Length: 620
Image 1 (cartoon, rainbow, N blue to C red):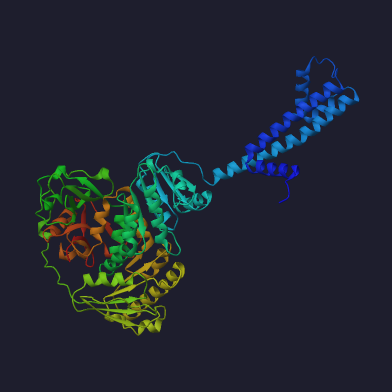
Image 2 (image 1 turned 180 degrees about the vertical axis):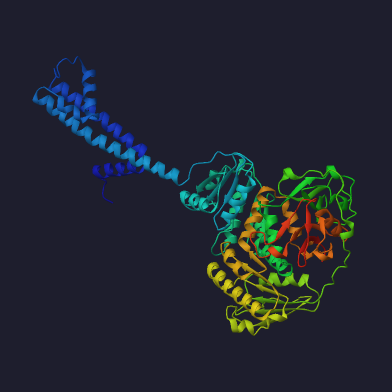
């Protein structure tokens, strides 16, 4: 190998210096500036020792040389010999280059620093903040709900970390969400990288929400984030995460450890679709309970009710509805009416705000003559139609099998290649599969829809979410037109992805529209605020135990009679049920609540008409 020349060594040293950044370059320019000033001063003392006039020593010459280097314009006012003027001109010329390079370097370094700050790479110093890791359309739902939950808390902060531009994230969120008094802090980084997680000051966070990203294999991304969270040092705040495929739940729990609550997205959405298909308005009730707009679920100490039975506790609060108990053995909704509240129990209530949970004064006002004692309706075999197919369809069918009476029939009509697969071992359902394009009017008419009590329209997973929602809308329009033309009546529940399509779907007057991504986003926001609610919602969505049912109001009180809601609660109590609200049939197609009223004041007078429903927690 040939020897390295001095020029190559110098160039190599210069390249290394340049690569060290702005600080090293400024230091190099400083050294050059000192060398230039010393050289100019030395030449001046050598070539023009007595100039300029009145200068008394080398120190003053150094100062003059420095001023010429920093302010090249000073050379215009110089007077003296040719040698002196030549030296000062050379010094000013050298200073011009050095100052120009220094200004350029400082400008570029400042720009890089501002760009870095703009990208959100500084560590946040908040305390008690909620951290959202990752990015998907659910982020708008979660941030919006957290803002509502923190509306009465000054100085609340939501911090988002995602591999996106900081300003873009802030702009998108502000376009979708009115932040009010809540501050939004966004940081650019990968939630799977421990180094980027340090930006979020997690040890001081109130809770962490891990989002399931859009795209292929989102669960692997979530599990990797959980691993990164588990491996970090310091305090570990509570974490909630959503997993798309039920089979990945054990791996996610193992990765996250004990501080993580994992939400099974497919399971939750499937249960809600099934319950909504059987009880019209169920999705609206659940959305009201999951969001922070109206009635919310709270856990409250049962100290004020110790010694009372659960049936007596139903009338205990004027503006809050008792729905269950949480004891050492877990959560029970609508327990037996003679269950005694112990000092270890927490009371589960629905209230518009925790400040509204106050004991009622006096006895409830009851209208005994209006109470009706109707026997429970026996469960009868049913016919249900499922249009389209997707990855969670098997879960939906199996959950439906747990609800229906023996001898019930399910028909699957889809052109999906996997339609009807994996449906062995059903106890109550007989399944038939037919080839059908759900957007084709003639093929839909050939299904004899009037024979069914319930129709479930699923989102076809062969298409992207936007296209799948468009096809669902087409199917709903066809179904509604066929109902109108033939005078048939069957419940319709549909599954969609985008919340913005709900407004369009209202034209179809579908009984229930389940926006699966929105439901999961609402659930994550609730658990981020209070992870103990996980047991409550898990019980609520389970087919075992008590569930939410809208039942005919005429089975509880006489139609047309003016009664207080306490009377409705008492009528339900005598049936072993817990009344939590009602549905006005006249408002079933009026958004945003579609006639649903949850947790009305106990003393509020109400008059039910034919077709109205009482919403209760009850066994099937």
